[in-house]
Image (cartoon, rainbow, N blue to C red):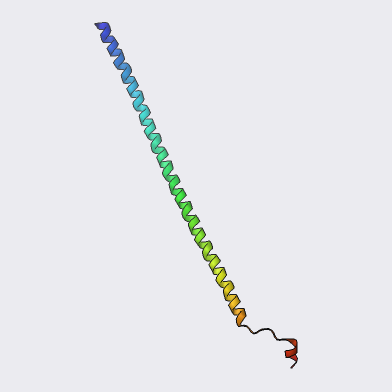
Amino acid sequence: MWKRFLEIFANRATLVRHHEALAKRVNEQAQEIARLTDIAQRLEFELQRLNDRMDHSTQRETLEREKLLLTVENQLLKTDRQLPPLDHDQEKQ
């Protein structure tokens, strides 16, 4: 009877130690998950920021191209309004 009681008590003590070890591991893994979640959120923020910068850069480049095209078109229109150069024959008269 006492032997059985000691076996049960020893098994109970072993189970308590295993439970404590598992609880410790679960706590450590929860902390690791929280750390990884934080890293993932920071990465998501940085990727969004880079994407926004790329969009802004693309828009700026598009506007610069449009501005250049308008400048060229403006210059072409100005040259069409200018008088053509005089021929040397006309200058003598």
